[in-house]
Amino acid sequence: MSTNPNPYESARLLAEYLLFHYGTAAEILPETAPAGMREALDFAVRTTKHFSPGAVERTLDVGCAVGRSTYELSRDSAETLGIDYSHNFIQAAADLAKGPLNYERLDEANLRTVLEARVPQGLPVGRVSFETGDAMSLRADLGAFDRVHAANLICRLFLPAMFLKRLPQLVRPGGELVLATPCTWLGEFTPPENWPVGSTLDWLGEELGRDFELLKAVDEPFLIRETARKFQWTSSLVSVWRRK
Image (cartoon, rainbow, N blue to C red; front, side, top):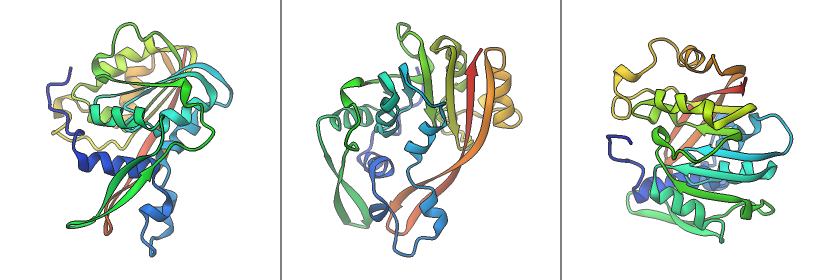
């Protein structure tokens, strides 16, 4: 278990992530937004597209936040499980299977706008389940999966190597792993002694190379709206691996 309190339980961050995962371009962007901001939308959808095409039996989404990527992964999976350390995030993700969820977008100061998050129509929500869990100590009886997805997770873990060491057990031989990370290593989440010594991609190769083959590594931008005039634009390193 992590020794740090979970910072992702506030109502503010819950609303930000509901907007990040489910918000439309009109709800997120200002009218004067440059093209780069528009290209950074739908990150929770885009990372799921890096798996090879085709249907699979089991998919795991670790660090699923409020669940958009989990629901997207269910398109091609008979069973999809989303796990996150935040109880608020997991509750919201599970509630969305039942119908739309209202939340308040912060505009500025005391100004807020009520919006509605909803799972896109046609997704097999009955094949999706969610649970709280710590990526560094996932329950032992999870079993193995054809696909494992972990977006913007590893540089928010106290001991990211603990999660990486579990991955060979979680991904079936021939299965695929998609890791996304902005590589924003911060002491408030990960002590510097647990950071990669060199580049994050080289470190992943060292940690995973015995059991996984690197298929590709690309950058994917993402955008988080904090207020009407403040946005986080970040580039995430997405690496795709096949279990040997």
